[in-house]
Amino acid sequence: MNDRLESPSEQGLSDLIRWKTDAWQDARMVNWYSGRMMVSESTNSLKNALEIGAIRRFARGKEVVDIGVGTGRAALPLVADGYSVTGIDSSQAMLDETRRLAAGAPISLKVGDLAALPCDDRAFDCAVALNVLVHFPNWRESLLEWKRVVRPDGRMVFDIHSLDHARAACGVDESQWPPALKRTQSKGDFTHYMSRVSIDEFVEFANGAGLAIVAAEPYGAFLGGGNINWLSYAELDATHRWKRLLSWFARDQALFDLGYFLEDAIVRHLTPRMTGRMFLVLDNRSDVQANARFAADIAARDEALDQHDFAALQPWLPHAREQYAARLGVLLKPLRSRRFFFGLYKTLVARMPGFDLRGIIPPEVLEQFGTWLEHERIDQHATNIARGWAAGAPFRFKDGIDVSIGSEYDLVKALLEKHFGIFDGGRQ
Image (cartoon, rainbow, N blue to C red):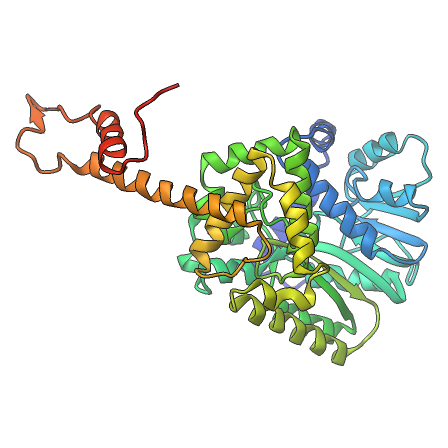
């Protein structure tokens, strides 16, 4: 028995872990969660496709343990692929729901904690976890426990948030981060807390734990919701217009196809600096040199990104420039898909001026984007004039009432029509 008293910080950490562990014991909550996973809303289907795709791509061996199995979102596809799967969860209600959804498919289910697995040493070829460690601060201790149950040369696959991304977007000084991001760092905010890892600390951990890093794949560049891309937060995620566009992913197959192509053919080949989430893959063997090569490769990709030239990324991308151009030429034909891609393009231009995308985006699309950007600039200029024309004017207020209110609409129309010459005055 350990009689050592916990410090206040340790007590807070324990409370957070306990709350996260016990959050899904209620059967009604599990029923709600299970239904939510089945409903195709906004980018849910895209997120699921990306995550299950990564799990399937990296899983190996025959016997797999799914840690924090939940309702079996990762486990059941692996069962369908022929793996022998054991699911572990702290919630019996979750396991009951997984059993129901399995509909007779062979899967072993056990109650257990992610940092104290009810499993023998070296029992599995592979350990997977989906949307689990993103919630827990004790990721190091958890991974050491997972290593215990994975055989030598076995594998661990899981997702977590990228600290490098948050720093690239908002700086290294966390006190200056936007409130929406800052609250996810607070271990006292049980609901919003998210665990983040940098590549440097992950390499250091892997070396000390006797593990070899296989991959760090970013994903979810534009999933929205709880998967914010902080590089584009102000321009996209914080706007209602972008949220409306994302809502169409559940109903527009062409838009889904575009999003999946961008994620699968570009985003996952970049670095964890570019998105808020990433899949990390470890093999249960010590290889410090391999980890050094991994870190050097990440640094090289970051340097390529800093060149603001798509061609600099080509050594890591799966397709040639002309193949990207041909595919985007098809995917960008629908107007909604093109408007979505314009949002990404506009943000890229703002964040990385001069980024060379020639030969990747069809010329006619680039020309249209240039026109849209110019029209947005003129719209904003006209709006600023209309909103500021009466500032300081002595006639603005009459009997305490601002008489300029309501004039903006007609003034913007007149500016666009008569001064800028890009509006014919017609209305539909």
